[in-house]
Image (cartoon, rainbow, N blue to C red; front, side, top):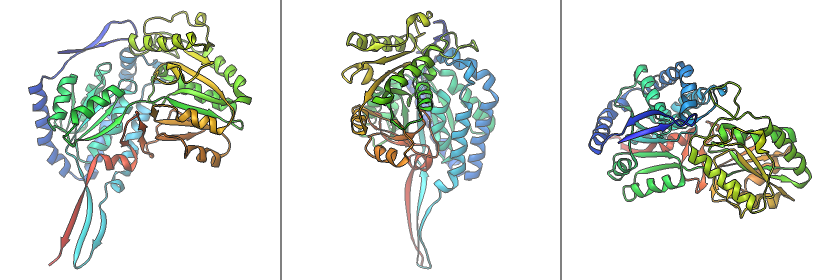
Length: 457
């Protein structure tokens, strides 16, 4: 079976990859498991150095990677790719590895040695998405390898060349080919491997439907799962907020990467007294965007990764307008709208009865609603099936933390948005999924505790 990457730039077939059949996939798993013990036995410092060398080798490819990403998923070349975040996350996980993986000494006396060690699961499957294909992959690949696991990376069919480049870089750096494998698998083979207990842990980033498929495949196997399944992330602007900073950050968080960000801002609630001014400033920002070919350095907003994604957002906007919402961006400002190229849109007059305020949009559209107080804002922020991040805007940190305590979400930001801090656990709740990546907790999920109770004679 072949996987095709249809470029959003012009609809052409940009890359074709052959998937592994069941037998070949099982052989790849067997090679990884056979290679794992020797890799785990290497000193931690050596594993860290090899992963860091692999990350640096990816950085050396960046001039080729940036236009390649534009062809695969549409991000404008002017933004320079993902290596900054890719390197930041891997470097932080390398920095904390010694402490995060250190044994917990309970007793070391003449009578007993009691200790809890963290040991690798064995083989970890990483299923990565196309929207930030390097950064989302490295979140798990780097700490999994550093912790002593072998890793198989299955990338989205929209960005198949990402895994190939990562494998090439890591192997050139000295990580054994069987320890880190990039594989092309169809859904049926992936599910069969999981159901057959091929993996000690599976980390999946993608849709809710995909997460359910992973859970179904793992049912009864007791395979550990990390699931990050998207969001409908809110921003809340209070009356004491720095309005210009709030507008700039929240609208960028809604529109950057054509809105195709897991923790992008998809709904905004603004205190009544600031609402009209916020909307005016937001519209001015969006009207300044340039929608076009991502290979053009002047383009600030590229196409969505696929025509079907753009059509889904068009449907949400049309339904909202039919239900009484107001569009604030004139289509005449973005005449190149069509196919995968989707003009940005700001909506007011929206309600939570509308799909655009409930379903994940994953596109350049945001609904903005006025609120009278914190209680109303909290109720609206929590009125969602998702719980990834929330962004609060105020000068009062105590007020922000008190509100944060009431929000059902994985991360709460104050006066920033759409950022992944590798020092904090990346996690979610509700339909966003379960588990936690990065930080010390990321290492805890990629290993298991093993207790040693040693009685000395």
